[in-house]
Amino acid sequence: MSNPIQKLMGLLPARIDCAIIQSDVNRRYFTGMLSSAGTVVCFREVSYLIIDFRYIEKARQCVTNCRVIEQHDLMFQIQELLRKHGAKTAAVESMTMTLHDFAVLQRALEKQVQLDRSDVLSRAIYDCRTVKTPEEIEKIRKAQRIAEAALAETLNYIRVGVSERDIMLYLNHAMLQRGSEGESFPTIAGDFVLMDFGAMVDGYHSDMTRTVCVGQPTERMREVYGVVLRAQEETLWLAKAGVTGRDMDACARKIITDAGYGDNFGHSLGHGVGMEIHEYPNASPASQAMMAEGNVVTVEPGIYLPGEFGVRIEDFVVIHEGGCDNLTEAPKQLITL
View 1 (tube, rainbow, N blue to C red):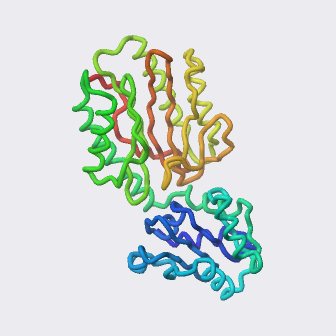
View 2 (view 1 turned 90 degrees about the horizontal axis):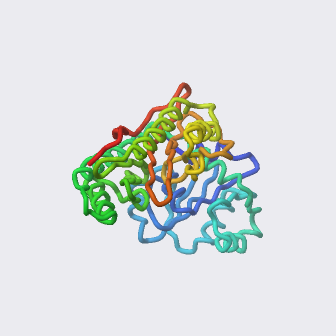
View 3 (view 1 turned 30 degrees about the vertical axis):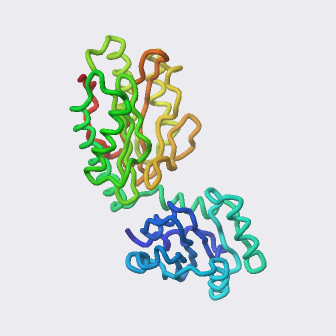
């Protein structure tokens, strides 16, 4: 992946001399290294990763776009870097930083620089992360192939008498056996059996839902499944750059409402996926987000009938100018076991 820090600094207004990044996900995104601690201090000419002794050797080996500094006195070291580069304004991650962490920075740096606590840095980070590079998409695709192979194995395991917990454990183990770093999020399994799960490769998540039937489905089950499938397929045809998240949600919601189940579709149509399982842009009734080339978003309509059953079908796609590339290859016809 090209240097994401250079891209980030190019997106920030000229009045921002420095960006301070401390959140785990963003630190991994910009340095390529997984760690539970560390601070990235970015200037337009060079960037630094300040990290403690636990990770210093690993950082020196794998971080190539920052100068790696062993942490001894973090605030003093940041002060020294700000002084060295003549920085007057430093932006922080306002959307992820805690009040405590901001107060610590403010006490240490307020006499030296103006801390920009607006959303300018967080918005620039989102702009970087929501448009995926080909390398990122390939990692997401690998995670999805792992999840699909695990699903195929799990379908052979599901039978009458197997508990939801056993299905969840089996599916998670099957993903780990195939190389997933861990489950993308807690696996959900429900009646008629609804499985929402994902794998993870190099920090990038996959996300999918499939609903299968143990035994013979009733006509009502077939009807509801068909409505959900039609809503999803129509929305996949619509998905492309320039379409808003609200338009995508409305497409699926109209089909479900016209079939008489509008009150039973209680969540948004979809969300972005990347280094976090829920990212920008969203596809919801209120979403003003405009889909852009390189966005990865889910399309997951559902119908939930209280006391009976629920159906959700979820794929996730890469948005392009003329349409979308569906990363999900698992079959969507109603599977009976």
